[in-house]
Image (spheres, rainbow, N blue to C red):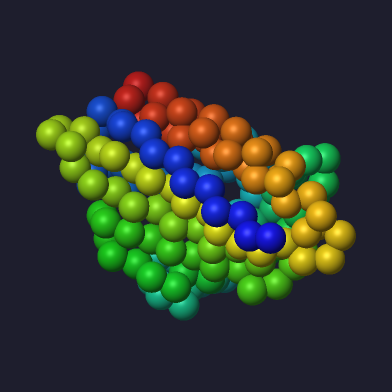
Length: 146
C-alpha cells in the first residue's frame, strides 16, 4: 500500500524568500517538528542534483535515520529528494508558485512502506498528513514573522 500525502499553504512572503529558506536542508530542524538533525555530505553545494544529506527524525515514537538525495532542483520552483533505503523509502517534493505577492508552497511525500510497516500504512498516512500540515503551518509562521 502506498502513501501519497500532499499539503499546501499560502505564505505571505515572496517565492524567492520561501524557496530559499525551505530548500535549505539545514533549516529543516527549525520548521519540521520531527526532524532533529541534518548533516550534509557535500556542504559546498548542498542544493544540486546528486547532493546527499543525512536526516535524524523521531516519528511515531521511533528514531529514524535516513539519507536523502536531491533528484531534481529548479531553484525557486521545485525541489525533489528521495531516500533509497530504510523501512520506508520515500520521495519528498517541494514546489513553490506565486499568488500575487505571496507564495503557495506544496509539500508532497510519497512512498511504499515495507515489511511490518506496510501493515500500518493507513495509520502512518494519517499521522504524516497531520505532521506535514503542522510543519507547513510552522514554516508559514516563521517566514511571515521575519
